[in-house]
Image 1 (cartoon, rainbow, N blue to C red):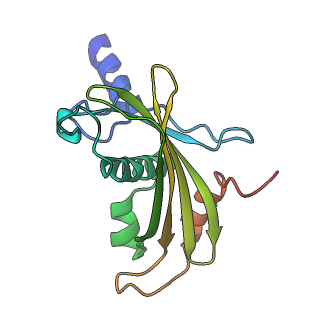
Image 2: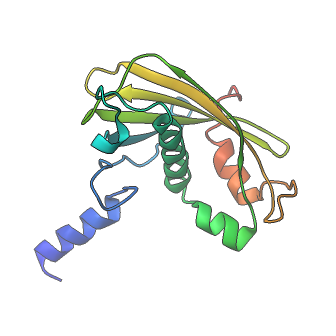
Length: 175
């Protein structure tokens, strides 16, 4: 393998993106520790996500919450597809809240901060903050509540491997 092939191979290995269209900037690997319990995902506001005034349409924040949640799972080494197919574990959203603080606009770089707020029985809650990356302005914050189910939408326990990983990020546990 040549030096340039090795450099490209190393770059591919270290790059974490949600899709191939560069809407998502390179996301850092999740550092889990006593003080770091937040996953950060970076995105850029697309023109299609804005209204006639150039302000992001409110429902897009819910999509960004999902992006943050999916990336948090990926950073822990999990993904939805394998959860559903291999483990028959589904985590449908049953409740969502979002508080809008300041508008995002076309071409803004944003950071989605995602945390595991609570795990109790078959209920899982995530907390989100959307910030403008350049000035750290809080644009929105919210939560999603999920019920852990099987493919027939019957409540079930979260498989141990997911529980162990998510527990490392829980913000409702004081060490």
